[in-house]
Image 1 (cartoon, rainbow, N blue to C red):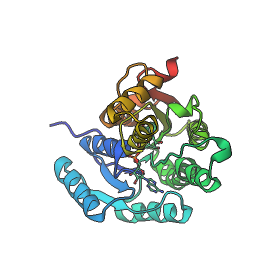
Image 2 (image 1 turned 135 degrees about the vertical axis):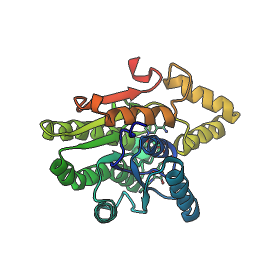
Image 3 (image 1 turned 60 degrees about the horizontal axis):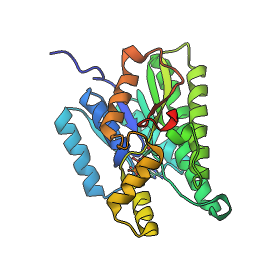
Image 4 (image 1 turned 90 degrees about the horizontal axis):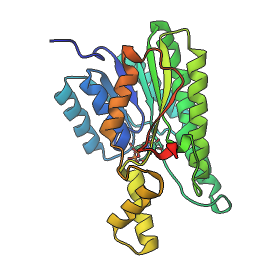
Length: 264
Ligand code: NAD
């Protein structure tokens, strides 16, 4: 039997207790990568997730409860990864939150939180992961941006600023490491039906006094020409490709998987 392509690699995926991060973690585990989970949730559920992933894919799993809004906790997460797994070969900067309000009504502390979690955490995790990746002359950094890293929507100032920022950070990371085996790319999903988006669907249903299914359809059709959600599994498959040898010259791209959103 052929060895899984990521056997022997360790992948740390921030915000992987739910949604897209979890889909990517499972896809990387299916290719043989050991997985370090991160994110919030019930400790029993997280322990189950670790155990089930380990058993299903025959990989080692770990977990860090680091809060991505706190640089000191990111430092602790990265040094624990070094102690327990010998370092991080694949870093997926995925943790993210949303807040929707017009600029004049946007609470400054929510702005700070969105920028810290959706943008600055990727800078900190990247700066701490790079030395070992460069030493090994192999590394993959995948930043989960968004269609909102390429185009804007009203009401999402902090999110759009953070996501445009992470696309910029992706390009700089790719360029600074262009002559090494370390690549950095961004994935820009359109709507994916995760808890983050379910909140927006529910808010829309409440505001329009309409059934949740109608709110879902309207939300999709406003932006996403396919009228269908992107899935965490599809995003996981793209992340696996970006980790493959075939992608070793894919550097600094912001790759949209968005049902046609940014083609308009
Ligand atoms: P989600 O709410 O399902 O998952 C977010 C994850 O981040 C969870 O594991 C949560 O515990 C974790 N998290 C939140 N705050 C954290 C913090 N301070 N420290 C550590 N972990 C934290 O959301 P999702 O939709 O899966 O989003 C994941 C990423 O994908 C985000 O960066 C989001 O902006 C991006 N994205 C989502 C969509 C979408 O339609 N769902 C589209 C484009 C981009």
